Image (cartoon, rainbow, N blue to C red; front, side, top):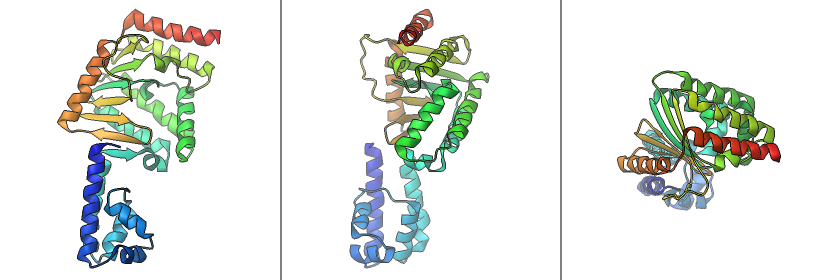
Length: 280
């Protein structure tokens, strides 16, 4: 969990406590009014649980200050711009998430991305994407609108054919060997990657196994237009737009890019991964 996110949640909790005490209510009294366990009130006030919009409506109403609901929701939206739970994002299914990603990518003239062990969504084949989205739905217990999600993910790739866009991708060689789909589907995915370098809107660098790296490939991240970082964790997507955060991730991308290989050397790494699948 990001430090900024936790701090923002603590600040929201302090505001909730303030409203409760102004109303002259104990933790137990407010819990009874809201139909909650007292522990939920304590967790919300101490920043150990993230409130929902419904929680904030109940809190404002039962403390006798319904007009404060909008203020509280604004604080929650500000908090969630830093960390967006995958489970919450996927509550309406994959298609909605993919369409929102498409809007962002269409608006970005430059995308610098790094992925340590997965083929970036913009480069995925339908079979690879189908397997990944199925795994995600099973892991988070979210709606299985897999085919709608795959179609929306494929539509995102239209950005790659629009002049004026540049996607600068760096992936670790592990992404070529991590089987997120069947071996046959992975062969097709590697063939797709091999055909990307000829496109004007894409640069594809691959960091080979065994090279000296100054940073550990901990997680994937995308830098949109040099002003917003979107980073993935197991449970959430982090959005970072503070100048120092963006500067750090741009520096990390430069360091990763400095040890990546391009052109024929990158093609040899892709071919080696494909050959390993043929032999399996």
